Amino acid sequence: MLSLAGPVILAELGWLAMGIVDTLFVGRLGAEAISAVSLGSALYFSIAIFGIGLLLGLDTLVSQAYGAGRRDECHGWLVQALYLCLALSPPVMLLLSGGIPWLGRLGMHPAVMAQAVPFLRALTWGTFPLFLYAAFRRYLQGIGLVKPVMFALVGANVINAIGDWILIYGHLGVPTLGVTGSGWATTIARIYMAAVLTLYAVYHELRYKTGLRHVSFRPDLVRICRLLVIGLPAAVHVTLEAGVFAVATILAGMLDPVALDAHHIVLDISSVTFMIPLGLASAGAVRVGLPLGYLLAFTAGCGIIGLWVGLALGLGASGLYLLRAWWRKSQTLARGKFTLAGAFAKEAPPLTGFDWGGSRAVSSQDRAGGA
Image (tube, rainbow, N blue to C red; front, side, top):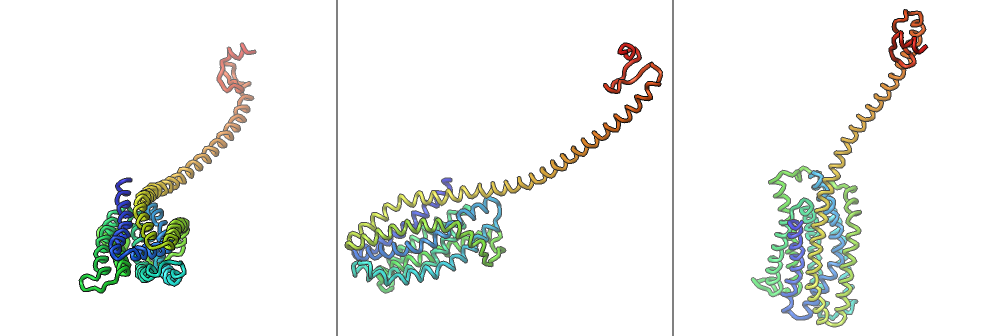
Protein backbone atom coordinates (compact mmCIF):
# COMPACT_ATOMS: atom_id res chain seq x y z
CA MET A 1 0.00 0.00 0.00
CA LEU A 2 2.76 2.44 0.97
CA SER A 3 4.66 1.73 -2.25
CA LEU A 4 1.66 3.06 -4.15
CA ALA A 5 0.51 5.72 -1.68
CA GLY A 6 3.97 7.30 -1.21
CA PRO A 7 4.41 8.62 -4.77
CA VAL A 8 0.73 9.60 -4.92
CA ILE A 9 1.02 11.64 -1.71
CA LEU A 10 4.19 13.30 -3.02
CA ALA A 11 2.34 14.10 -6.25
CA GLU A 12 -0.49 15.72 -4.28
CA LEU A 13 2.00 17.73 -2.24
CA GLY A 14 3.76 18.70 -5.48
CA TRP A 15 0.44 19.97 -6.80
CA LEU A 16 0.05 22.09 -3.67
CA ALA A 17 3.65 23.30 -3.90
CA MET A 18 2.94 24.97 -7.24
CA GLY A 19 0.49 27.34 -5.54
CA ILE A 20 2.93 28.04 -2.73
CA VAL A 21 5.69 28.85 -5.25
CA ASP A 22 3.35 31.27 -7.02
CA THR A 23 2.62 32.99 -3.71
CA LEU A 24 6.32 33.32 -2.91
CA PHE A 25 7.12 34.89 -6.28
CA VAL A 26 4.20 37.33 -6.43
CA GLY A 27 4.62 38.25 -2.76
CA ARG A 28 7.38 40.68 -3.70
CA LEU A 29 4.84 42.63 -5.79
CA GLY A 30 2.71 43.56 -2.79
CA ALA A 31 -0.38 42.49 -0.85
CA GLU A 32 -2.70 43.13 -3.80
CA ALA A 33 -0.72 40.69 -5.96
CA ILE A 34 -1.10 37.86 -3.43
CA SER A 35 -4.80 38.67 -3.14
CA ALA A 36 -5.20 38.53 -6.92
CA VAL A 37 -3.56 35.08 -7.10
CA SER A 38 -5.68 33.86 -4.19
CA LEU A 39 -8.95 35.11 -5.66
CA GLY A 40 -8.22 33.95 -9.21
CA SER A 41 -7.07 30.48 -8.11
CA ALA A 42 -10.07 29.99 -5.82
CA LEU A 43 -12.57 30.93 -8.52
CA TYR A 44 -10.79 28.84 -11.15
CA PHE A 45 -10.71 25.66 -9.09
CA SER A 46 -14.26 26.06 -7.83
CA ILE A 47 -15.33 25.47 -11.46
CA ALA A 48 -12.54 23.40 -13.01
CA ILE A 49 -12.52 20.93 -10.12
CA PHE A 50 -15.89 19.63 -11.36
CA GLY A 51 -14.29 18.32 -14.55
CA ILE A 52 -11.42 16.78 -12.59
CA GLY A 53 -13.94 15.11 -10.29
CA LEU A 54 -15.74 13.51 -13.22
CA LEU A 55 -12.50 11.73 -14.11
CA LEU A 56 -12.09 10.21 -10.64
CA GLY A 57 -14.11 7.21 -11.80
CA LEU A 58 -11.05 6.11 -13.80
CA ASP A 59 -9.37 5.02 -10.56
CA THR A 60 -12.09 2.44 -10.01
CA LEU A 61 -12.74 1.33 -13.58
CA VAL A 62 -9.13 1.09 -14.73
CA SER A 63 -7.88 -0.65 -11.58
CA GLN A 64 -10.70 -3.22 -11.69
CA ALA A 65 -10.04 -3.96 -15.35
CA TYR A 66 -6.31 -4.20 -14.69
CA GLY A 67 -6.84 -6.50 -11.72
CA ALA A 68 -8.99 -8.76 -13.90
CA GLY A 69 -6.25 -8.90 -16.54
CA ARG A 70 -8.24 -6.99 -19.17
CA ARG A 71 -5.60 -4.59 -20.48
CA ASP A 72 -7.64 -3.67 -23.54
CA GLU A 73 -10.44 -2.48 -21.27
CA CYS A 74 -7.99 -0.26 -19.34
CA HIS A 75 -6.98 1.38 -22.62
CA GLY A 76 -10.61 1.71 -23.63
CA TRP A 77 -11.45 3.63 -20.46
CA LEU A 78 -8.56 6.01 -21.14
CA VAL A 79 -9.78 6.72 -24.67
CA GLN A 80 -13.30 7.48 -23.48
CA ALA A 81 -11.90 9.71 -20.73
CA LEU A 82 -10.03 11.69 -23.39
CA TYR A 83 -13.30 12.25 -25.24
CA LEU A 84 -14.80 13.41 -21.96
CA CYS A 85 -11.91 15.88 -21.57
CA LEU A 86 -12.59 17.25 -25.04
CA ALA A 87 -16.26 17.66 -24.24
CA LEU A 88 -15.70 19.27 -20.83
CA SER A 89 -13.02 21.81 -21.73
CA PRO A 90 -15.05 24.26 -23.90
CA PRO A 91 -17.98 24.72 -21.47
CA VAL A 92 -15.65 25.06 -18.49
CA MET A 93 -13.54 27.64 -20.31
CA LEU A 94 -16.65 29.52 -21.41
CA LEU A 95 -18.03 29.47 -17.89
CA LEU A 96 -14.76 30.83 -16.52
CA SER A 97 -14.58 33.53 -19.19
CA GLY A 98 -18.23 34.44 -18.69
CA GLY A 99 -17.76 34.70 -14.94
CA ILE A 100 -14.90 37.20 -15.17
CA PRO A 101 -17.20 40.27 -15.56
CA TRP A 102 -19.01 39.25 -12.39
CA LEU A 103 -15.83 39.58 -10.35
CA GLY A 104 -16.31 43.36 -10.32
CA ARG A 105 -19.58 42.95 -8.46
CA LEU A 106 -18.06 41.07 -5.56
CA GLY A 107 -16.96 44.23 -3.75
CA MET A 108 -13.25 43.47 -4.03
CA HIS A 109 -10.52 46.06 -3.86
CA PRO A 110 -10.04 47.64 -7.34
CA ALA A 111 -6.28 47.01 -7.28
CA VAL A 112 -6.94 43.31 -6.57
CA MET A 113 -9.50 43.03 -9.37
CA ALA A 114 -7.18 44.72 -11.87
CA GLN A 115 -4.67 41.89 -11.40
CA ALA A 116 -7.03 38.96 -10.71
CA VAL A 117 -8.90 39.23 -14.02
CA PRO A 118 -5.88 38.80 -16.38
CA PHE A 119 -4.47 36.15 -14.03
CA LEU A 120 -7.71 34.15 -14.31
CA ARG A 121 -7.74 34.53 -18.09
CA ALA A 122 -4.23 33.10 -18.27
CA LEU A 123 -5.22 30.13 -16.07
CA THR A 124 -8.24 29.43 -18.26
CA TRP A 125 -6.04 28.48 -21.24
CA GLY A 126 -4.57 25.63 -19.23
CA THR A 127 -7.92 23.92 -18.71
CA PHE A 128 -7.63 21.24 -21.39
CA PRO A 129 -4.03 20.33 -20.46
CA LEU A 130 -5.19 20.08 -16.85
CA PHE A 131 -7.99 17.67 -17.76
CA LEU A 132 -5.64 15.73 -20.02
CA TYR A 133 -3.15 15.38 -17.19
CA ALA A 134 -5.92 14.25 -14.82
CA ALA A 135 -7.08 11.56 -17.26
CA PHE A 136 -3.60 10.11 -17.85
CA ARG A 137 -2.79 10.32 -14.17
CA ARG A 138 -5.86 8.29 -13.19
CA TYR A 139 -5.11 5.80 -15.95
CA LEU A 140 -1.49 5.32 -14.90
CA GLN A 141 -2.44 5.09 -11.24
CA GLY A 142 -5.04 2.48 -12.09
CA ILE A 143 -2.41 0.20 -13.63
CA GLY A 144 0.01 0.81 -10.76
CA LEU A 145 2.36 3.29 -12.47
CA VAL A 146 2.61 6.20 -10.03
CA LYS A 147 6.26 7.22 -10.28
CA PRO A 148 5.73 9.01 -13.63
CA VAL A 149 3.02 11.10 -11.96
CA MET A 150 5.41 12.10 -9.19
CA PHE A 151 8.11 12.88 -11.75
CA ALA A 152 5.70 15.06 -13.74
CA LEU A 153 4.73 17.08 -10.65
CA VAL A 154 8.35 17.58 -9.57
CA GLY A 155 9.30 18.76 -13.06
CA ALA A 156 6.22 20.96 -13.24
CA ASN A 157 7.25 22.73 -10.03
CA VAL A 158 10.67 23.45 -11.50
CA ILE A 159 9.17 24.75 -14.74
CA ASN A 160 6.60 26.80 -12.83
CA ALA A 161 9.30 28.38 -10.67
CA ILE A 162 11.46 29.22 -13.69
CA GLY A 163 8.41 30.54 -15.52
CA ASP A 164 7.47 32.71 -12.54
CA TRP A 165 10.99 34.13 -12.36
CA ILE A 166 11.04 34.93 -16.08
CA LEU A 167 7.47 36.09 -16.67
CA ILE A 168 6.67 37.89 -13.42
CA TYR A 169 9.85 39.95 -13.26
CA GLY A 170 10.66 40.13 -16.98
CA HIS A 171 14.00 38.30 -17.09
CA LEU A 172 15.81 37.07 -20.23
CA GLY A 173 14.34 39.84 -22.34
CA VAL A 174 10.72 38.85 -21.67
CA PRO A 175 8.26 41.69 -20.87
CA THR A 176 7.36 42.08 -17.20
CA LEU A 177 3.90 40.55 -16.77
CA GLY A 178 3.50 40.66 -13.00
CA VAL A 179 0.70 38.52 -11.60
CA THR A 180 -0.44 37.62 -15.12
CA GLY A 181 2.96 36.04 -15.71
CA SER A 182 2.30 33.72 -12.78
CA GLY A 183 -0.89 32.54 -14.48
CA TRP A 184 0.95 31.87 -17.74
CA ALA A 185 3.73 30.03 -15.90
CA THR A 186 1.12 27.77 -14.30
CA THR A 187 -0.48 27.11 -17.69
CA ILE A 188 2.90 26.19 -19.19
CA ALA A 189 3.55 23.85 -16.26
CA ARG A 190 0.21 22.13 -16.85
CA ILE A 191 1.02 21.66 -20.52
CA TYR A 192 4.29 20.07 -19.41
CA MET A 193 2.50 17.71 -16.99
CA ALA A 194 0.06 16.57 -19.65
CA ALA A 195 2.85 16.09 -22.18
CA VAL A 196 5.00 14.05 -19.76
CA LEU A 197 2.24 11.60 -18.86
CA THR A 198 1.10 11.30 -22.48
CA LEU A 199 4.62 10.57 -23.67
CA TYR A 200 5.18 8.09 -20.85
CA ALA A 201 2.00 6.21 -21.77
CA VAL A 202 3.25 6.00 -25.36
CA TYR A 203 6.71 4.90 -24.18
CA HIS A 204 5.20 2.24 -21.94
CA GLU A 205 3.18 0.91 -24.86
CA LEU A 206 6.17 0.81 -27.20
CA ARG A 207 8.31 -1.00 -24.65
CA TYR A 208 5.86 -3.49 -23.16
CA LYS A 209 3.37 -3.92 -26.03
CA THR A 210 0.28 -3.68 -23.81
CA GLY A 211 -2.10 -3.18 -26.76
CA LEU A 212 -2.77 0.55 -26.42
CA ARG A 213 -2.03 1.14 -30.09
CA HIS A 214 -4.64 -1.44 -31.10
CA VAL A 215 -7.48 -0.12 -28.96
CA SER A 216 -10.53 1.32 -30.69
CA PHE A 217 -10.53 5.11 -30.72
CA ARG A 218 -14.23 5.41 -31.47
CA PRO A 219 -16.36 7.20 -28.87
CA ASP A 220 -18.42 4.81 -26.78
CA LEU A 221 -21.41 6.55 -25.22
CA VAL A 222 -22.11 3.62 -22.92
CA ARG A 223 -18.64 3.82 -21.38
CA ILE A 224 -18.73 7.60 -21.22
CA CYS A 225 -22.04 7.40 -19.37
CA ARG A 226 -20.51 4.83 -17.05
CA LEU A 227 -17.68 7.27 -16.31
CA LEU A 228 -20.22 9.98 -15.59
CA VAL A 229 -22.32 7.77 -13.32
CA ILE A 230 -19.31 6.94 -11.15
CA GLY A 231 -17.59 10.32 -11.39
CA LEU A 232 -20.60 12.61 -10.92
CA PRO A 233 -21.06 12.04 -7.16
CA ALA A 234 -17.33 12.59 -6.63
CA ALA A 235 -17.41 15.70 -8.85
CA VAL A 236 -20.30 17.20 -6.90
CA HIS A 237 -18.54 16.42 -3.63
CA VAL A 238 -15.20 18.03 -4.51
CA THR A 239 -16.96 20.98 -6.18
CA LEU A 240 -18.91 21.70 -3.00
CA GLU A 241 -15.69 21.50 -1.01
CA ALA A 242 -13.87 23.88 -3.36
CA GLY A 243 -16.94 26.10 -3.47
CA VAL A 244 -16.89 26.53 0.30
CA PHE A 245 -13.25 27.61 0.20
CA ALA A 246 -13.99 29.94 -2.71
CA VAL A 247 -16.81 31.60 -0.76
CA ALA A 248 -14.52 31.97 2.26
CA THR A 249 -11.89 33.54 -0.01
CA ILE A 250 -14.41 36.01 -1.42
CA LEU A 251 -15.62 36.95 2.06
CA ALA A 252 -12.04 37.51 3.22
CA GLY A 253 -11.41 39.60 0.12
CA MET A 254 -14.31 41.89 0.98
CA LEU A 255 -12.40 43.05 4.05
CA ASP A 256 -9.07 44.20 2.65
CA PRO A 257 -6.10 42.75 0.69
CA VAL A 258 -4.10 42.01 3.85
CA ALA A 259 -6.93 39.90 5.28
CA LEU A 260 -7.21 37.99 2.01
CA ASP A 261 -3.44 37.45 1.98
CA ALA A 262 -3.52 36.02 5.49
CA HIS A 263 -6.41 33.74 4.56
CA HIS A 264 -4.57 32.53 1.45
CA ILE A 265 -1.31 31.75 3.25
CA VAL A 266 -3.01 29.92 6.11
CA LEU A 267 -5.09 27.95 3.61
CA ASP A 268 -1.95 26.88 1.71
CA ILE A 269 -0.31 25.65 4.89
CA SER A 270 -3.38 23.85 6.20
CA SER A 271 -3.93 22.17 2.83
CA VAL A 272 -0.86 20.04 3.48
CA THR A 273 -2.88 18.06 6.02
CA PHE A 274 -5.58 17.53 3.37
CA MET A 275 -3.29 16.35 0.59
CA ILE A 276 -1.87 13.45 2.62
CA PRO A 277 -5.22 11.68 3.23
CA LEU A 278 -6.26 12.58 -0.33
CA GLY A 279 -3.22 10.71 -1.65
CA LEU A 280 -3.99 7.77 0.64
CA ALA A 281 -7.58 7.75 -0.61
CA SER A 282 -6.47 7.68 -4.26
CA ALA A 283 -4.04 4.85 -3.55
CA GLY A 284 -6.72 3.01 -1.57
CA ALA A 285 -9.17 3.22 -4.48
CA VAL A 286 -6.59 1.59 -6.74
CA ARG A 287 -5.62 -1.06 -4.19
CA VAL A 288 -9.25 -2.03 -3.69
CA GLY A 289 -9.95 -2.03 -7.42
CA LEU A 290 -7.06 -4.37 -8.30
CA PRO A 291 -8.11 -7.34 -6.12
CA LEU A 292 -11.77 -6.64 -6.80
CA GLY A 293 -11.15 -6.89 -10.52
CA TYR A 294 -9.21 -10.11 -9.93
CA LEU A 295 -12.03 -11.42 -7.74
CA LEU A 296 -14.62 -10.61 -10.41
CA ALA A 297 -12.57 -12.47 -12.98
CA PHE A 298 -12.08 -15.37 -10.56
CA THR A 299 -15.79 -15.39 -9.79
CA ALA A 300 -16.62 -15.40 -13.50
CA GLY A 301 -14.24 -18.33 -13.96
CA CYS A 302 -15.84 -20.13 -11.06
CA GLY A 303 -19.21 -19.47 -12.66
CA ILE A 304 -18.13 -21.23 -15.85
CA ILE A 305 -16.79 -24.13 -13.83
CA GLY A 306 -19.97 -24.17 -11.80
CA LEU A 307 -22.01 -24.29 -14.98
CA TRP A 308 -20.23 -27.43 -16.14
CA VAL A 309 -20.37 -28.99 -12.68
CA GLY A 310 -24.08 -28.22 -12.45
CA LEU A 311 -24.66 -29.71 -15.87
CA ALA A 312 -22.75 -32.83 -14.85
CA LEU A 313 -24.69 -33.13 -11.61
CA GLY A 314 -27.97 -32.66 -13.43
CA LEU A 315 -27.16 -35.33 -15.96
CA GLY A 316 -25.89 -37.59 -13.20
CA ALA A 317 -29.03 -37.14 -11.12
CA SER A 318 -31.21 -37.76 -14.15
CA GLY A 319 -29.21 -40.89 -14.92
CA LEU A 320 -29.56 -42.16 -11.34
CA TYR A 321 -33.29 -41.51 -11.45
CA LEU A 322 -33.64 -43.44 -14.68
CA LEU A 323 -31.47 -46.24 -13.28
CA ARG A 324 -33.62 -46.41 -10.16
CA ALA A 325 -36.79 -46.51 -12.24
CA TRP A 326 -35.33 -49.26 -14.39
CA TRP A 327 -34.26 -51.18 -11.28
CA ARG A 328 -37.71 -50.96 -9.70
CA LYS A 329 -39.35 -52.05 -12.89
CA SER A 330 -36.91 -54.92 -13.14
CA GLN A 331 -37.70 -55.93 -9.57
CA THR A 332 -41.42 -55.84 -10.27
CA LEU A 333 -40.99 -58.08 -13.28
CA ALA A 334 -38.68 -60.35 -11.31
CA ARG A 335 -41.19 -60.67 -8.49
CA GLY A 336 -43.84 -61.66 -10.99
CA LYS A 337 -41.57 -64.30 -12.47
CA PHE A 338 -40.54 -65.56 -9.04
CA THR A 339 -44.19 -65.92 -7.94
CA LEU A 340 -44.94 -67.88 -11.06
CA ALA A 341 -41.87 -70.01 -10.41
CA GLY A 342 -43.09 -70.61 -6.82
CA ALA A 343 -46.30 -72.10 -8.12
CA PHE A 344 -44.33 -74.61 -10.08
CA ALA A 345 -41.99 -75.24 -7.13
CA LYS A 346 -44.79 -76.81 -5.16
CA GLU A 347 -44.73 -79.66 -7.60
CA ALA A 348 -40.95 -80.01 -7.33
CA PRO A 349 -39.30 -82.78 -5.18
CA PRO A 350 -39.06 -81.72 -1.47
CA LEU A 351 -35.27 -81.62 -1.33
CA THR A 352 -34.86 -77.88 -1.54
CA GLY A 353 -37.13 -75.00 -2.17
CA PHE A 354 -37.36 -71.25 -2.02
CA ASP A 355 -38.99 -69.02 0.50
CA TRP A 356 -40.14 -66.51 -2.07
CA GLY A 357 -41.50 -64.12 0.47
CA GLY A 358 -38.09 -63.88 2.20
CA SER A 359 -36.12 -64.35 -1.03
CA ARG A 360 -33.85 -67.01 0.51
CA ALA A 361 -33.16 -70.65 -0.10
CA VAL A 362 -34.39 -73.16 2.54
CA SER A 363 -33.82 -76.81 2.98
CA SER A 364 -36.55 -79.46 3.00
CA GLN A 365 -36.03 -79.93 6.75
CA ASP A 366 -36.66 -76.19 7.38
CA ARG A 367 -39.76 -76.43 5.28
CA ALA A 368 -40.97 -79.43 7.31
CA GLY A 369 -40.15 -77.71 10.60
CA GLY A 370 -41.99 -74.62 9.51
CA ALA A 371 -45.03 -76.68 8.77
